[in-house]
Amino acid sequence: AATTQIVEGLRAKIAAAGVKAVGQHLGTMFTLFFTDGPVRCFADAKASDHERFARFHAAMLDHGVYLPP
Image 1: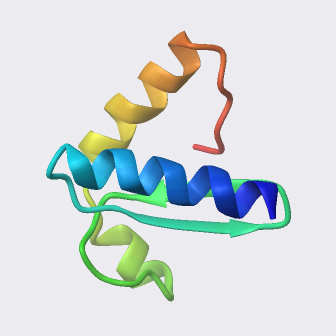
Image 2: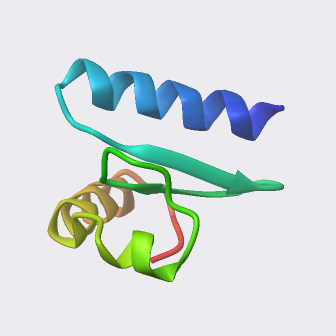
């Protein structure tokens, strides 16, 4: 439940900035895909905005948050 809250909070903040993102999690591990559609397979993940994710990932690391790459 806590991870769902974190993912939904991130998605809300990102949406407020006008950016499309899909948050997914399993247990306590989560990630975001910068895309406007669902991510159900590798092809969907591959079509997401990797450059935007790289910038997000680096910013999170700068703030001490370690996400899966």
